[in-house]
Image (cartoon, rainbow, N blue to C red; front, side, top):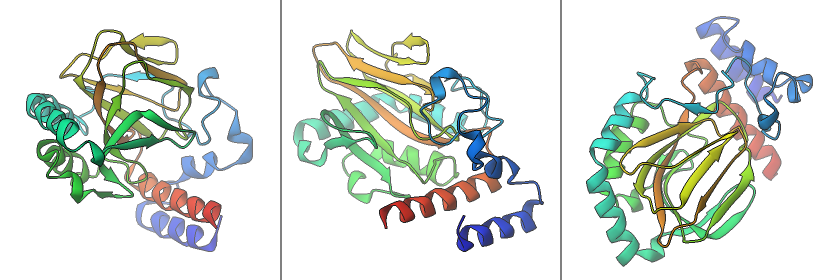
Length: 251
C-alpha cells in the first residue's frame, strides 16, 4: 500500500477502532486471491471476506436500501415515460456502454451518476429517476461512489457475455423499466426474468450474463450500491483504496 493509504487507514482505525478494517486488510493479502470463494466467483478481482456468498438478494430485506427500492417502484410509470421520451427525442445523449471488459454498441446507457457524482446533464432528461436517486441513494450514502447508476438499454438480439465484475462489496440493483418477452438474466446458476416496475438485487461478483431475445429494446435502471453487509469505515477505506489503485494503474 502507499503512504497515503496507510495514513487514511490509520485515521479510520483511530476513529472506529483498531479492528474496523480487518476484513479490508485480509482482502489485500495475496493468499486470499482464490481462497474461500464460490466457484462462480473466482474471476472477481477483490472479494471482501465475510460477505455472504449469495448471488441473488431480496431487494426488500435491507432497511438501508428499502427507501430507494420502494421509491423507484412507486415512480416506475413516470420514470418509464421520461426514459422513453429521452430515447425517442434525445438519443444522442445515450452512449455505448463501456464495461471494464468490453464496449458494446448494442448496449446503450444514459448515466445519472458517474465518477462519484450525479450527472446534472441527465436531470432534464430523467427528472424523476434523478430525484429519486439523489434523495434515496446519493444523499443517504447507499450508492457506491466507485461505480455508477444508468439506464441500461439492450437492443433486440443483444447479449452480455458471462463475466464476473471486479468485487463483491457493492451490489447491483435493477428497476425493470420496459421488458420484452425473451429478455432474461442469469446470476450464478439461476436465471430470472425482470418484472416490469419491480426491482432485482444481485451480487455481480458472481458470474452473470443477460440477453434480449425480444423484438424491442429492454431497459432497466441500474444502480451500484454498497453491499448492506459492509460497514461505514470499510466503505471509506475501500473508496480511497480503489481510487488510489486506479490512479496507480493509470499512471
